[in-house]
Length: 427
Image (cartoon, rainbow, N blue to C red; front, side):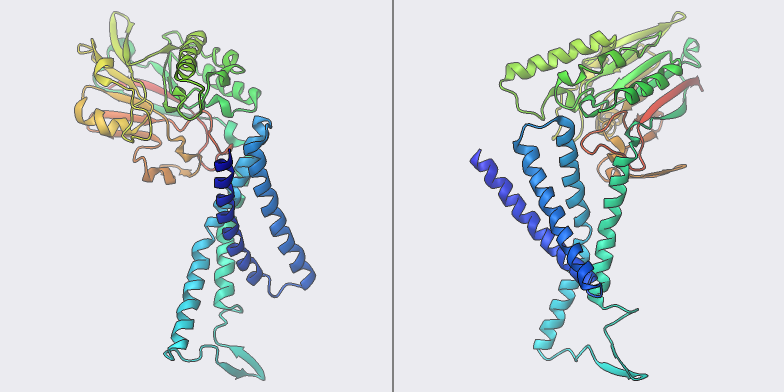
């Protein structure tokens, strides 16, 4: 406990240094503001810093409700994440002034702030467009910090984490049996039930999916954040997802309970077994490195599901594609459910060219980015080359769903929650 407090005090000290650094930029930016207004703004700055750090301690050490703790920690994240955008501009100004000071001491640099007479007024040559370089850089840094601060708070206030978007894709598979031509598939991913706080909105998304009258539905992992108990209030909602050819599901990295302390290995295993039971109670066919033959009109295709497997060692590698594929050699079409899209590039494209299409989730589109027509961008693309939408390599396809739920930050900016509807055609 003592070491935990010491670590938190150390982190708080570092954050206060960041606060003081940004505070200097605020002072420079307010130098021409009236004294009374300037005093209240500067006091307000430190008041916000104080309640932010106090909230951090309260969220960590006090027993408070899940929603309140989430609000406190999200505010803390937004507060300091935004300030990081100001730091580069303030560093540039400090480096500039440091070089100027050294050069002056060495007698190399001429006096920079020459005063020149202009219509009876004295003008400082360092002043550009009515402000000094330091003022310009300070204000630019504060504006850059303000952009993520405003957008992330908008993402919270707008409640768009429940603004479910239906995305439609037509998938052409040359080996698709005639009986499956025109079949309709729905996909959702990354429910993260432990993050939800609006049951009516969650039900609305399920209603949207059911209204599509899909022939079958895929769920591609992360039903919970940490514990199976998170699903207690939502089982009666997700059990309403029905499809005549079945609802098939897999596990994601969060489903194993790796991100929370357990009193024992036995308790952790019991949590996982309880999650298996939840899938069963939902009426979902959970595929644990196994496959199912889907038969229609005397013809069949294979649905293959692996446990979590990705290229990064940060996440559990429990997937076994070889085991999952056993007995599918004669299937004309193989559809793979695998939570992490990096699995596609790392194994599927290289060693499993008989997989026609893989369905994944995991990235959430980082819950931040831009989608405009065919153009899309998110910082997550620098970690996951395949992070949202449809990808193709030769005859193989991958679709990455950006998620039904959310994790950590209870908002989305530009990348909205998704329900994907596929129509499969021969060709």
